[in-house]
Image (cartoon, rainbow, N blue to C red; front, side):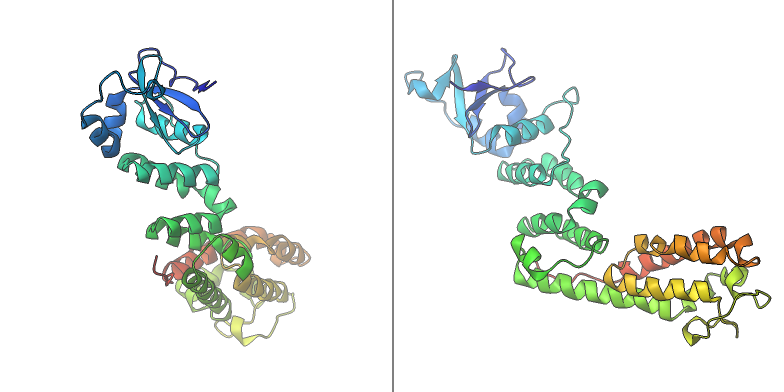
Length: 304
């Protein structure tokens, strides 16, 4: 026995039935399908067969259309097609995104496709599954989404070649992603080695760790020299560790990874501890903005 779809796809006034691949019947309205899909609009424009056609093509007096989508995918797809009174499905599972996107493209539902593409690049999905989002974007030739996913993949440690291949990414995309990540890591580390960007921000002169009167030991590293003054050792050590971490994961979140340790060391100095917490928070925000600017200038060189 076929299953009946849940509301609103069980309306007794519906005039056609879509049958999913797992044998669930969806009672829907031709006008809704025709307005959402050129595919169904063209189908409904065809001459209707006489009523003596095979009874298996009808159910409860209504014409039936078999589709290849399962009931879960079909339910979400149809909810996008119905009026505002029917709530859009929450596409929080990356597998659902892929299946609904495929169906929307198959039936020419451009409005649905656009809304699914927006759901595809929500921060929650990008943070949890950036490589999978990239793979889906490549599968459907969605270049903007591919570039966004590549950017978010920097928030994680570098994926192995096998893990990338397991997502069915083409070799040129894998190579492009590896090269992109390398360029981003190098650019991030350069920001640690060359503080010209910080000098331009006009904030460095206020930072406690560059004041000559501080009793902390200074770490003589020419990379961190500003106006003839070396920074306190706790800050230089923070930058050394951050530089290594950024090369592995060049993103703003890394800047706070060693922040607590740095502030704890600064609190051991009667001079630094007065403003170390607030100033380090301000510094990491300035650093993150510059890092975002630099990474944004690096392009993902792939053809999809």
